[in-house]
Image 1 (tube, rainbow, N blue to C red):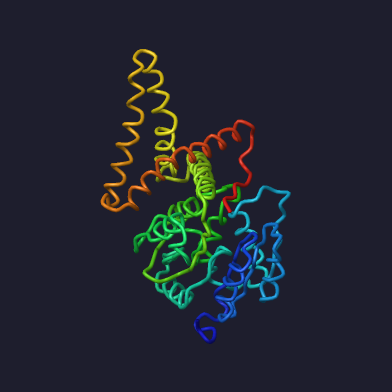
Image 2: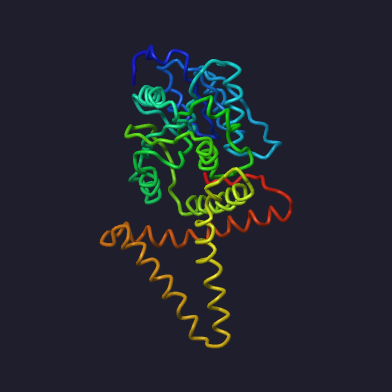
Length: 337
């Protein structure tokens, strides 16, 4: 951890952290930023574990999110950014970070240097890794999920350093999105010829604390809701020339969890043996996914099975979004912790 704030950063970088009942994880997050002396806004979403007081004790400006309005992480980041601009109006870059993460040594310097050297870059992110990848199979999955290719990218995740002028040019995040808000934001940035980069630098340490199947299942439901919501949003946006986001993910989930079973059930009305194809087709798809990701490792087979089961969770999330659309609603909250 640096001993003092690097002089080239000066007052050019601010931080928006968001969280809900993160406890010690939030303390580690803020302590990892403390040596830089940066302005920090912590946005809290109705925590009951003393998180706001802990953040204030560490010098952060605390914003309690009004939960009479629909909560989303996107809205929390936007309101945190608005507060940050009030207390630090001259910053060039904003580091967004989730409260269950901590910043790696050297990340602020490396990411700031990168944006300084690449004026067409709006967002830079690095390698997020899990604090305890071996504590559960689900944590291992998260750690592998974060290990994405280095280079120009289509999107970032929740932790990223962003150019303030670019963020303002697209009016920030879409407040209404429950999940998938980062790819949707990045799609609008790319429409304005900004670029998104992932560099080969350690960025943050994440503590998923995902120990049980139920947590993973709720995450799959949330992902499905997000896929459908972002697809719906970007499909209606005339400015997105690359086409709607997550169309493939929505179709894939619905195919395996709805269309294929229904098709075979209809076929069974004429020949009941057709239903025997259902487990065979699922098994074949699981084998295909496992072989594609390694095949000879037990991990690959467990991952393939979980991915197939996940299609049903995603479909449940998609159906929840459709139900809300029919009721004239899009908001709401799906937590998986």
